[in-house]
Image 1 (cartoon, helix red, strand yellow):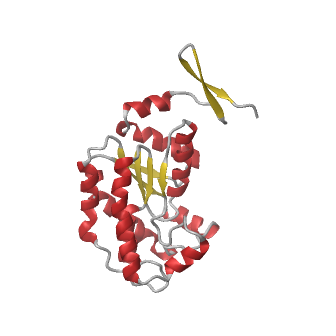
Image 2 (cartoon, one colour):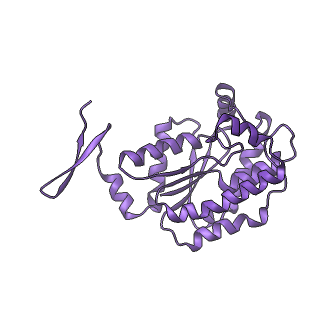
Image 3 (tube, one colour):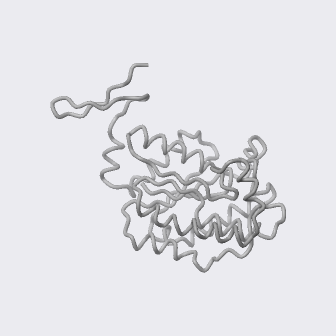
Length: 240
C-alpha cells in the first residue's frame, strides 16, 4: 500500500507509520518510509536540524518544493510507501505560519502546483495509493502537546481548531479524495494498536489482491526463518 498520511501535528501520524512499517516488515515486505517533511526534517542530525531552522525562506521553499516533487517518483517506484505530510501539510503550515518569526516555516508556498503533484500520481495508475487523514479531538491534541512536546513544535495550542479545519478542507480538495482513495482515522479514544487495526480494515478496499493475501497469512510474533518442506513455505520461529 502506498500511503500518504496527513493531519495536524500530534494526531498520531508518526505512531501509525511506525506500527504499519513494523507490520509490513514482520511479513518480510520492504518499506520505504519518508516521515520527514515537517520543518526541520526529523531524520537529520541535531546540528543539521538547528541549521535548517535558520535557512533563508527562499532556500527552505526550494528544498521543500524539490522533495515534494521527488516523492511523486517514490510513490511510483516502491510498493509499500509511508509518506507523512507531503504537499498538503506544506501548504497549510506555510500559509498559516510562514510570516511568524517564531515558526520555522516560510511564506509564499507555490500552491499553484498543489493538484499537479496528485495528477502525476493518478496518471501513473498505481493500484493502491491511499490518502490517510489522521485526526483527534482538540482536547486530545492539546493534551499530547502538553505531555510530550516536540522539540520543534509547529502548531500552537490556540490554533488547533483552525489548523484541524484547514487539514479537513485541504483533504476535501484533494484529487485523491475525489477518487475515493481516502481513509480517515480519529485517534482520540483509541490505542495505537486499535488505530492500526482500524487503518488496516478501512484500507482493504484500496489494496491489491496480493497484499490482501499477505495480510491473511499468520506470522510468528517474533523473529523467524523461512523454510520450505515438500514445496510448502513455512515460517519457523527462531530460538530465543
